[in-house]
Length: 242
Image (cartoon, rainbow, N blue to C red; front, side, top):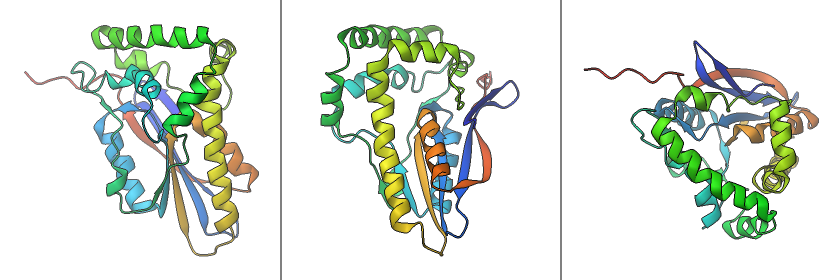
């Protein structure tokens, strides 16, 4: 299943997908997130969370984590760069009017896990993140960003090679957090899967995490019921008026 699509006409698009299970009123809607996009994208996601969802499961390291702050500088430093015209994900969960659950790691847990990542991987990330952020601020384009955002069930050769080299980082940033998310989804299914009245759970996580969520829902008997594409950003920023 493809969650992020990149086309010349539509730009970068995110697939919002609803999963239903026969005989159950419980459904899950996946919102694959890109953490840097046009404000209209986050506005559309926010509107759907308010109107479609009875509960939201949201991504986010809970509590202070200096390492997380350093890692996210790769996109946070691009917020508001005029040439790109993009903003950092800014959904106000407190203002949604629906319950929000965050099963992610605590900052303390993340820091503890990160200390066990091989030093060569931590050193490589520490060196590359500032360089990437600085280069993107000076010369980066939406098209360059788009080339690295497509997510599908099958990894590309380049992605597999990168995963083989950065196994420790991949485990902390992706796989361990996937397991926490899936535990929350499965627990909610066990508790509420038998209900007959409609109840929608929205899952708002980075698009990479959806590679784990969709198969887990399928294993629980949920199937794709409907989907729509939301534009994250066009490949070219709008031209400024003179």
